[in-house]
Amino acid sequence: MSKVSTNWKTLSSKIDYKNKYWEIWKDEVEFPDGKTGTFYVRRKSPFSVVIPMSADKKLHLVKQFRYHIKNISLEFPMGFVEGKNPYDTAVIELEEEMGMKADKLIELGWYWYGPGTTDQKCYVYLATDLEQGESKPEEGEFFEYVDSTFEEMGQLISQRKILDGPTIVAYHYLEEYIKKNEL
Image: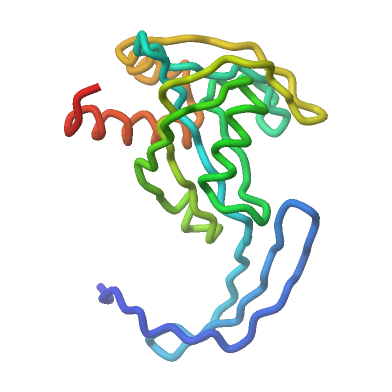
């Protein structure tokens, strides 16, 4: 068995495909053992996931049809940074998708979204002290809203009724935050 090594060399790197959402880069690399290979890396702006929690401890989610999986998905609001910082993106997505503004927005952490295929990061925020306004979905976005308690959401994940990865990870970040802080 070989050992883990960071001694990889990028021999060349170029854009193989590009659209307004992401780029696919073709990298020729030299492995630690001297052999060479090709990696295709999807490069995409970071994104933010927002956990809206109201004063009564209800978690607010969006229910929407996701074309890529041809199915309905139950998720926390989320969106891409697109030239903005992750915090500002969280503020924008909360208002666009839920019509909410938060007096308090706490970064719970970040993670690599799918390090086997992309270099994309996901930032997780908890939004509290919410003020309800009117949502402003982007073109092609159609939502229903679902409220859940923390415990109910855990059950929905266990029952595989919530299958969205970023939402599941965000829930676990919230779980850790709740263990360390009184809400």
